[in-house]
Amino acid sequence: MTALSADAAAALRGRFVLLGVSGGIAAYKAAALARALVTAGATVQTVLTPGATAFVGAATFAGLTGRPAHSDVLADAHEIRHVAIARAADVAVFAPATANLLAKFATGLADDLVSSAFTCLTCPVVLAPAMHTEMWQHPATQANVALLAARGARIVGPDDGPLAGGDTGLGRLADDAAILAAVAAALAPAGGDRAGALRGRRVVVTAGGTREPIDPVRYIGNRSSGKMGYALAVAAAQRGAVVDLVAAPTALPDPAGVTTHHVETALQMRDAVVALAHDADVVVKAAAVADVRPADYSPHKLRKDGGGLSAVALAPNPDILGELGASRNGAAAGRPLLVGFAAETEREEQHGRDKLQRKGLDLVVVNRVDSRDAGFDVDTNRALLLDRDGRRTDVPLTSKAALAGVVWDHVEALLTGPAD
Ligand code: CTP
Image (cartoon, rainbow, N blue to C red; front, side):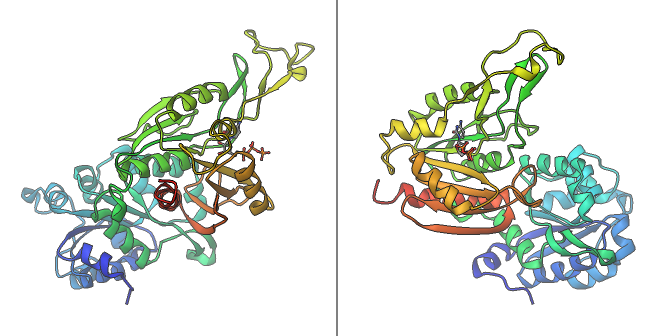
């Protein structure tokens, strides 16, 4: 029996949950999920893709939920089932969500009951992806997940562990407890129990990697995808903050409920951040800022042979956070509250503490960027939070959205600490 907190159980009681199941081996686990949702007091309407029915029968779900499970969009066509089910739903959870299902959802394809119902949904959506590691890591899948997350879907998992066919890796369906918690959180007001916790606060978040142009075709850049910064901006908005997102180039769509300022270079980012920081309560610098830029921009494409490409001189970029910290006269606990990120490959605590001191920060979020499931261009992260009061918090591997929540929890505590 899946353990569920009292709050989560209360959130599910009496609610209408649309459970969408697609055709992966993890479909068999959706039966246990259906059972757990029913046990928590929810009404569960199951819809299955044709692929899902190859793994688990509709009768299983009908027996567990006490309602017929549907898979045919054209059966009883007069009921316009995909619309009726979507309208009734308080929350929709798709578990497992295969790569194919995510691709359909991202593009709006509606060629079966599950995808047709999805395109009718106006309620919160939880997606629990499950597939082989290669499929999960494919850029198309990652782009689809990022798009769906930016549109507001909660992504839970996948986990690392045994997969079908004797393989092991990232791609395993999240466990029941995690999916149930995500469904309950989706039913709670935006921001969960922290909704409104940042109301009246102005926050500035930076994201992405700056590009420093060499000539019209080349630039110095880095591997930042912007996902962590975007997750932080969305989470702050959900908690009621007024959010300015200063975004260096990313492939992500502008998030809803946030004012996005697009910049390209470190100098442009500095100008934007310094201007916005005057009125801000918090500045979170998740952006990867290029430490150097070409000293001179060449308006003509540089030639590789004797044309200057191998002799491009570099000039240091300003340390934006360092400047903000110094302008508070180095006084931690002043305003705005400053949060930095530190991408490290070794001795992370030592480097993190050093950055906290050197830049005059209140909190630093240290990432290890040398593993494949954390850091650059993935949806998961693990981190070490170090604050000005010497506290340290380890955040094990989790989604970037969940890590954003932990960061804001800390920021809220620092904002309401002795400095206020
Ligand atoms: N940062 C900044 N301006 C810069 C460089 C970094 O504001 N020119 C910010 C980043 O946004 C991040 C933090 O400082 O929040 C740490 O970035 P990182 O690149 O890890 O640190 P550096 O100061 O560049 O130190 P080093 O490269 O020596 O590790």
